Length: 389
Image 1 (cartoon, rainbow, N blue to C red):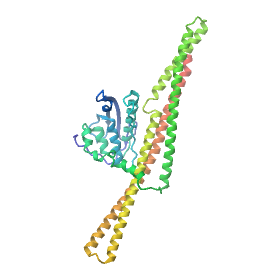
Image 2: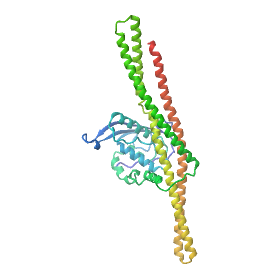
Image 3: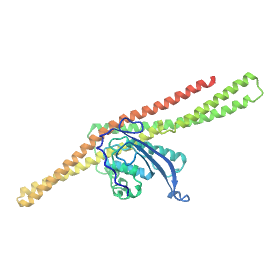
Image 4: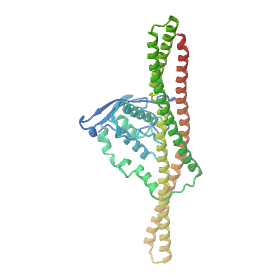
């Protein structure tokens, strides 16, 4: 087992920043060096491991710079653990599972960048950064052994939060009575549709640019071929300049295609928020679960109170029995009040999380669009300069 983790300062006592954050504790997390391990003759037995390196100024960790090996299922465990430990908190989602092509270079790179982006989001959250399971994930050298002892707590086992959220959909019917949450659910559904449209448009645009990029190369080859023909000097010079321009356009196209693969690209942001929408739905599910728990506790309290009143009015129960009945009623009332408070706390936290979600969504998309637009403008300027070179 790993040495015990040091205690964290109170949540929110110190500002936390990510790679580009503000003052306070800082975290820079990289997920890299993906390696396929397992039997090469049995794909089903293979998996990819990643090196997760953490650089931090937080005193909660034993070192300032350390790294561990993690496989994809470990990231999913972290998501489940954080979701279970923090009802009402929007936990950044991990990339989706895939049975096909999971060892292809492009798939592995996309997954790696998605995992890194998710971890940076997590450590930037003031409530998640102090979670003991996050420290276990980032720091433990015996992680596979450690999580086996916490296996029963994992919601993926079918008895935790995620299973309860699923049960809340198929279980007792819930009719929303808070206009805020009703509006937010509708807004979230609309946002999801818009994200799908954006991702589809970006994909189509990338295909068109790739086709255009190929055309630049074909045109360059054609112009070079013409310039080598027995033509007049001025015409040959024009063709050579045209070929040089197409070559420059080809180079700029290569730069653009490369820039779109960066983690902070518009596509990565859109995909990240598509996953976050799923996390928001889990948060809404946590609130529904808390409401059903409150209603169940309230029903038990009313039953206990009714039974006590009936026993008291009958006159048949002696003093000791009435005392026990009164104690059971008081205990049921306490549990009901606790469940009610839990529901109110989750509702309040969810509203705060949605405000944070809205602010970060605007900031992230604004930054991504600005970088994307700046790159486009820069490349267009290069195109304008190309003829004069």
